Image (tube, helix red, strand yellow):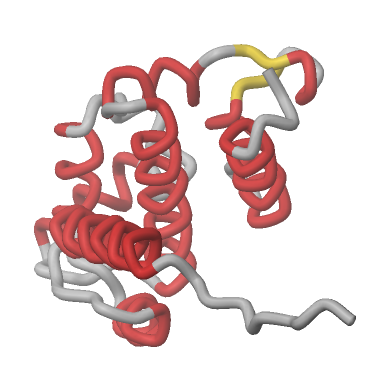
Length: 157
């Protein structure tokens, strides 16, 4: 009877995954404008409201102000900045959603230029709408995340 060996994950693979996760959290912290090391940290950040500077940081990543209007309308953003207010919970949640998609696309596609180009590209899967348009809703963002995972795992070309 053959002997069974217990599954032992490759330590090198685990180390690479941990490094990637650390890099992602570092980029997430930079874009959100405050340190986050866990998903629960992000929950707290959203509940407290993000600094409006997250919009500037996203435009510095290559997204246009017009593409970010679904996060917060321009007049509201101006008002929040003028009065020193933080983003609302909903606005913060939309910001985090976009940051996460951007980082996921960057990691898969190799950089921010490739990621923003892909996010803008009309896709047949979404009836000719771009991933950025679909991600305006939470459910749409989940579909975009699923597509990125499928691409990474080789299910979609």
